[in-house]
Image (cartoon, rainbow, N blue to C red; front, side, top):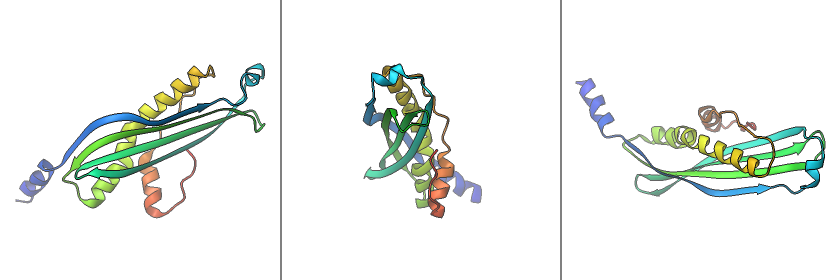
Length: 155
């Protein structure tokens, strides 16, 4: 009988990705063209964060913000600053509050991150800088840190 209840609960769960889109995008190379005349020794400061909000009953917007601030060498000279807010609309229903919170805080950002990563790489390439291939981000760990109230370290 308990198997029937579990199957019935799972049948009521719905998850659908409605749309993936760029909400905000920015690229700055404030020291060009002089930066191109220097030997390039990049030092990357990466910041990754995510948030979500309910749009309507069962419809949620999830956003992943990726900021890459790249300096040249040990100097504080900015080579470039690239920022992307990648978002998605997710139709989700039938989850408990805890399951929904985890889905919005970890699972959905994991779906969106590859799109943000590709967008950052594209921006950097258009600025004629060497490719910036970001490593995968563990949003489950970030979610767990937020749940414990632990300050998030830069990725």
